[in-house]
Image 1 (cartoon, rainbow, N blue to C red):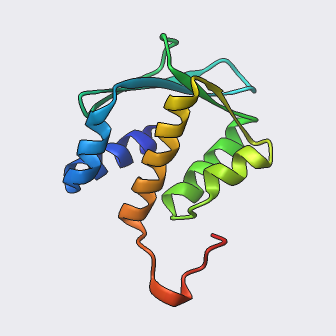
Image 2: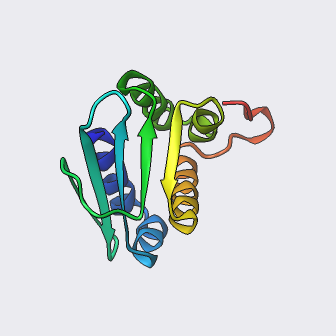
Length: 129
């Protein structure tokens, strides 16, 4: 999960539009697993990201079925598989809890992050990734 923090921070540094999007709305979410009670919080305030390992008040949560599945999906996201989160929700690997507007904002942010690092490659682009 710390790699996710690094990825968001790097994207905000190298792309002004992404940083601007992060700064538009403050929100806090946690990421954890049904397997155990360890969580990591992610707090975006004014475009700055804070993260740590404790339970805090949140706007929404990403709850993985288990740690291994969560790690695999996060790696898929980092590798540019555009529908990794969507497929995780559909397949019951990820449960999203909390206020819908923040979940939607998070999904939009992840899509923009993915497009930033993995832009479409024309006609031969694999849409199933």
